[in-house]
Every structure is written in structure tokens, then in C-alpha cells.
Image 1 (cartoon, rainbow over the protein chains, first blue to last red):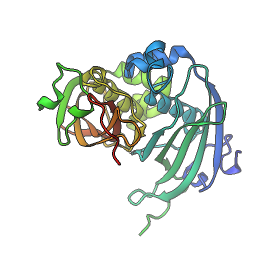
Image 2 (image 1 turned 60 degrees about the vertical axis):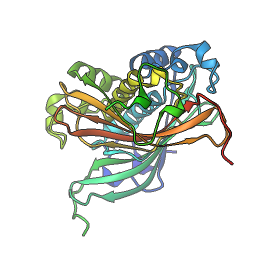
Image 3 (image 1 turned 90 degrees about the horizontal axis):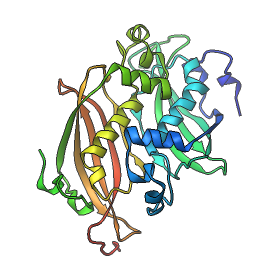
Image 4 (image 1 turned 90 degrees about the vertical axis):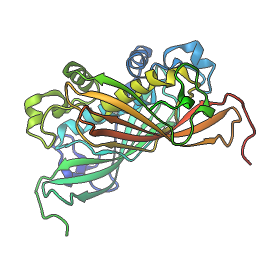
Length: 162
Length: 162
């Protein structure tokens, strides 16, 4: 699944993110303890903190906060390729879909797909990479999908598009 | 700023979220220690962990992970009204804009605006509330904006729209 354009042995620049590339990372095991710790700090709704309360809801049992799933995804992406890149962060996120609950004991795989890339309109040393980021559980069910424009430094600064 | 429709003394149901309502909560003080702790766990990019590395980037200094700002916003929203409501979570987020860095020492205010509301198409006991959620710093600069559909139980279950 790892195309040579995202070779993990070399530092990645904007030019390396080729439209259509797909990479996968993981699995990452999720524990009840981390679900509870995150919820206690950031999203203390009963269905993220209490098994009995969660069973009484449409969620059907304890599950991770949607924001926790975003943070887990971010860390998997950081370890996967962002920390070995010219990442400059992101101006935001275009869409987040929380599709299925993440449960204690789940093993999650990250799939990153390069949707498109373009040079910055204002900075000749910068480019944008639109990515779709998805987490799948061990049953190959998609639990979260998000789309975001990531900013990376260019290996070779070029002209700014007219 | 607190319309009677979001009276914090009573438990809130879907019917209480009237289009155009605006509520504010905070301020919430942000420490360097929590910025570093979050980044170490979820988003260990140098500009969220190291002052000198951050100064060398377009961010101009240490700042919170964008995901951290989402989590801070979630906790302020939970304490503000979600925990005293019939919240059923959310299916996702329509848009996240990370507009300005959140710095150590910032004091953040949450503004929640009800954009629209509609009954669920499939569940007579449920409704959606589209909200815009924004954090402002002490200089009244908007640092993050997001739009999301929140799900709430209805005080009085009604017919499902045809």
C-alpha cells in the first residue's frame, strides 16, 4: 500500500504527495482507560464515561468521544508521516464524519488518501495537499472520515501560480 | 447575551434551541503546561512542543494544536450547556477553521450561535440543531470557528416530517 512517493525513509515535502496515493498505518489498540481519561478531561458526556449510561443510548455502549477519535487519528498521522515531513500544519478541516462508535479494545488502522495538491497562491515555498483520513476497525468498518487541507514546505520553491 | 430559551437553570431539550440565539461562556485560561501535555500525547509537531522551533515558523511562537483548541471548545460547551441537556452527541462536524494561534496565557471565550434546527427525519424523539461555535481571545480576535449539527432529545416527541 506504500507508494514510493511516500517512502518513509526520506523526509517528505509537498512534491511527494501525489494525487491518488494511498498509505495505511497501524493498527493502534484503544483501551477503556484512555477513552475514560480523555472524556473526563474534554467531553464528559455520560455515554463516554459510564458503561450503563451508554448502554441506555442509541450508541449501545461505552465509546470514545468523537474528538478523541480525531486526536487518535492525528497522532497516527504524525507518527506515520507528518513528523518526518515539512509539515506546516493546516488552516482547518473541511469535514468530519463520525460514522461508528470506537469501542474499548478496538484496533484501528489509518488510511490516508491524497485527493489533490496545489501550490500556495501567496507563498512560493508552500503547497497544500488535500487529504482524506479514515480510521477502520478490525472488522474493516470505517469509523471516522475527515477531509482536510494540509500545508507542507516545498522541496524546491517555485513560482506562485498566476 | 443569554436568551431565556437557553436558561441554564433548566435542562435543555431540542425545542429550546431557537434559531438566532447566541450564548457566551468563559473565559477559560490556557496554560503552557496544558498546551505541551496535549501536544506530547496527540500532536507532537515541533511548533506545538518547542518555543524556539515554533518561533522559526510562520506561527511565530508556541501555540496549541488545532485539535487541542477543538477539545477545549468541546469542554467549554459541555460545561456551558451540553451536560445539562438531552444531548445525543453529533454525527460529525461540517467545518473547522483554525484562524489564529492559541497562545500560552490566552483567556478564551466561547460563543455559540444557533443557526437552524430541524426535527429528525427518522426518529420522532430526536432533533438536530446546527450551531456555529467560536472561540475568541481577550483581544476579541476569533481564533477558531466550527459548524456542526448537534443532536438533542425532544421534550415532546412529535410527528416525523413527511
